[in-house]
Length: 207
Image (cartoon, rainbow, N blue to C red):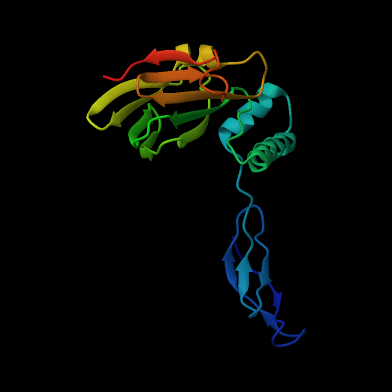
């Protein structure tokens, strides 16, 4: 049906009325004036997505409770990321991987995974390149790399299930994996200690 809704115009005074024909359905659409006195139609509430409704039914909770839980979950993730300055890994391990050079010349590397391309990087003598990531739920996170040192070249898996087991520690927290590139080849360790330490394990030589 059609109807007119009266509105007080703040520019013309309390006694002035503006009318505007509207097409109304079951629920009336209320109008109010903006700063210029023009009528604005209030936005109707958008119904929640169907998957939210089904999830609420499955969990036996109300939609308001679901919204509150969703907001809390989002807040926890954002707060964790802001506090640590790194991605928040809630159900998988959080890894930091360092590639350090013990070669007097610059070395070049390209590091990639199935999901990310970390790009090309030049690592100077006693310098390093590092990155952080959340381990995949299926435990199949892989980062592989290409290394160049003058005319010498090598490919290497900097992180896979084998390297993970060599670096992982018996605690739940941030994990570290350190690579040391030397003239004779590539070493890995869960600790950033001097090369004389026995924790360094030789993995591969230069090609």
